[in-house]
Length: 228
Ligand SMILES: C[S@@+](CC[C@H](N)C(=O)[O-])C[C@H]1O[C@@H](n2cnc3c(N)ncnc32)[C@H](O)[C@@H]1O
Image 1 (cartoon, protein in one colour):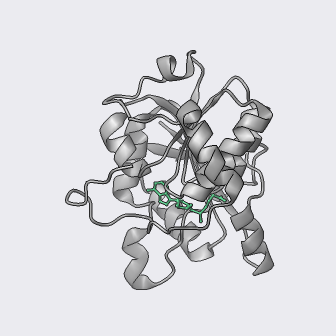
Image 2 (tube, rainbow, N blue to C red):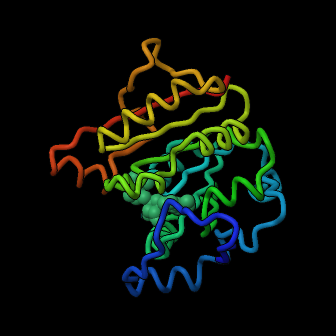
């Protein structure tokens, strides 16, 4: 995983060392070559990478991969691309992919924004999922929030017409900000006629971060919008 530090200074993550279990370390050593796209080609060709022309759903910052593991089992006719920088989480997803025989999952360990900007052709994605992105609570850190006008423009360009952007958060102020931002973006149409949040759909399980939010009495806020 290589970052070009000169190009984009403000990133939506801080690389934490993170403790790896023995199983995760073993999975990274043995399974990463099987599931990872590395090196990332100049332009990602999903038909050849997955060996079929099925729709591609991108999960940005998948954490330990719970949402991909759930959806990839429910939707074997969909290709799942997960992009995450946190190595223990990658290890966790690898273990589950192998245990469950999920051959519709591929992983990139890198900055998702860079990968979209530099390695994806326009209109190559059927869905983009951003679940419980780091809320960067402090005002001086808000600039690190992954959802911003540039990210929305980038996502709109990489989605097919009719493609879905699905965002979920437990942090109400961030969720409201994103709702307003998305509703002001002409490239997207909210799935709800009143432009509001939506109930959690079947493909999104309750994840570790959401459970943590629930313990703190946070709500859950899902937004589903489509590219016009
Ligand atoms: C709060 S966690 C949420 C994990 C998961 N989506 C869930 O719902 O449980 C946010 C994750 O996004 C990852 N992340 C943040 N910005 C990213 C980026 N630009 N590219 C890849 N991963 C990113 C972080 O490493 C972190 O694991």
